Length: 251
Length: 254
Image (tube, rainbow over all chains, first blue to last red; front, side, top):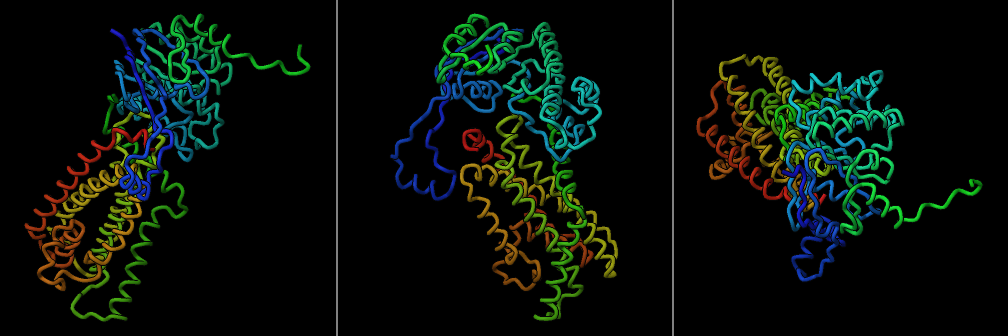
């Protein structure tokens, strides 16, 4: 039984989307035959993850990585194929989603617990755990706008992992935390995997993916370039994308 | 799919709106009082001094019975209509049931309503109109208005995702309603053949009921309450069904 299964999934968006205004709607009614140029964000993507697996997703900008995570979070539906996700999902798709700058850290933790589906009792019981893990206890009653982006990501990640999801989805946000917090996250994620939970991670930091994941998926222009053990996939990706030139003055 | 505690989430979203709104106002809740008081003063001046009327007693209270439900309706519907687009971060990033966005927005406007109802009750007492047993009807008729606005907000917030002009249509409708709802004139002055239409408008029916309860110390008419119940729940059901139909491609259109 797979925790996450994509079967021949395609997702397309209209490239020259008309603005959602009345004038444009009427114009379309009058000239319905105007061709729309669809753009495939994902095309024929298939993979299966058993519980406990951890998938690292790489690819150039616009390859469809975020679309894939959004489909797995069931924020949108595929145009073709099927997406099956079995279990409770916690997703960190963007820094500070659902956080409000005028509210305090503690208030934001409560709201985010609710957004992730915790009950009142669970939110109360886990509050201390969340704050301790985040390491921002000193500032927890300050408004969030006084936080650095590193502190926000600490708090967001802390709520997500303490919500005890079956499936954790992370889109390129971990890089904002410092080394100490990153080490803490890695430890937590490894513990997660031992507990049989599933992960999907998008990152441009290949080292991060190598330390967190056991499988890799390389996407390019919405298609699967390569799928397999993380090391092999990342090596192939490294070879395809040239490393940045060394900074002058350095050997 | 999102499997969580709906009530806890709804409470948190409503509370968040309250806090954000009132933390950014130096005078806080005072603004909820100032607006109806100013409107009451201005309209009382116009309709008793400039255009005198002799048959309506306790004109300020009479007016407030119309202004309070209208201004709640106005704020709740307009903010509800734009709620899905304005909470795009939530709609596009968190798999919560989307219905909760317009509903929590409408419910958070209820704080205004509660404060203004308290003002209305104080004015009623101040004008020497006593407490009566029919005040027990108040929570019911007000709750029906909330159900009605939730239904409208579900409908227009979903349409607003696809046609952003919707909010301007709603704002214009509110402007027209100010005159078509009996705020500063009484039911008795409406020509007979239009009364039926007025009673089908939940805002008008609510104002009518409030005046029966507070000014005449009598129970609201059974037929008015019945129409209020039917129309409110019918509109809510319509809004709910329309929202479910339309929410499928919110992601692509926000």
